[in-house]
Length: 189
Ligand code: SF4
Image (cartoon, rainbow, N blue to C red; front, side, top):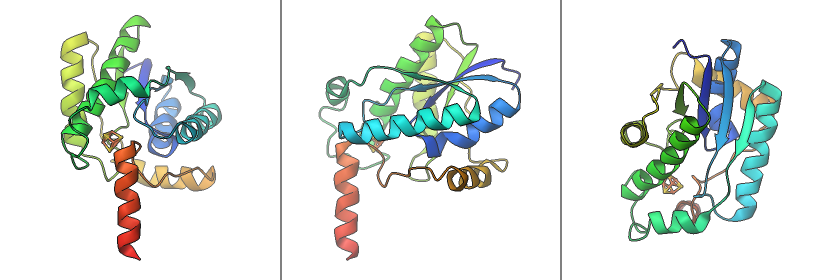
C-alpha cells in the first residue's frame, strides 16, 4: 500500500468501519468523504451521515461531508429508473460519486483514493472498480481498488458493527432501492 494520506469515499458507517480501522491502525492519515446524493429520503441521508461521523470520530479518521444534491443525482440516473440493482443505474451512480471524490482528492492533494462502495454483498465490486477506473482516467488521481471484504476485514467489520451498535440500513440508498426492498418485504409475508 504505502500511502500516508488517503481519501476514502464512503456510503455508510457499516461498510466503511473495517477499512477505516485497518488504515488508521496502519498509520495512514484517513479522510472519509461522505458524498451520497443518491440517498433517499433526506432523513435517511442525515441518519447515515451522523452515524458515519460518529464512527470516524471513534476510529480516529477525519470526516468531510459534501453538499447533499439529490436533484443532480436524479439527472444522472434519468432514464435508468427501472434498471435493476447492479444494472446501469448503479454504474451511473457510482461514477458520479467517484468523479466527485476524484476531484476532491485532486483539490486537496491526497496521494490516492479508495472507496467502500463495493463492500455490501448486494453490490458488484467489479462494477465499482470499472467506474473508479473511468473516474481516474478523467481526473487523474490513482484509485486503490482494494477488496475491503478480504483479509479478515469482513470479520472485523461485523465485530465493529456489534461493538458500536451501529445503525444498519435495510436498502442500498436511492428511492428505487427502497421501493425494491419494500416489495421484497411484502412478498416475503
Ligand atoms: S441501488 Fe444503490 S448503487 Fe444503485 S443506483 Fe440506487 S443507491 Fe446507487
